[in-house]
Length: 186
Image: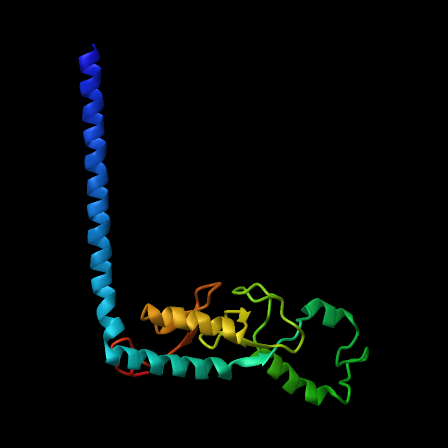
């Protein structure tokens, strides 16, 4: 029985060693393959130039979306406060003509549902500059400009030129420069 147990232990040890050698060989093969795919675009001057141009374009578009952070007031509070533009008889007050442009301006600005940047988790200060999505109006998220610049740099490293919102993944900001260095026909 002792010889059989020793033989069984040796077989298990050989199988374990073979599995470890196979796992190490697979790791080396996969990492070399991954490095060979990534290395050419890192050394390519045209790829670097395209990414630099895309980064500059994205930064310009991002900078154009900067606005001052204001704490949002729920619609119910403004309706119940008694500050409506009509009095009890249904007549319009004198200042009502200017409220339409203010209402239109409010509709152009995104609704801010959070009081903190979802990237760095710091709370926004009143009147602090934040950036919002220009890709879609459905995205209510706002971020610090520097935080979004870090997201842009990380995306461009992966050759992504249409940056999604870090929270809802809807298009946040996009460049017209494609990964191949050609401009899109938009």
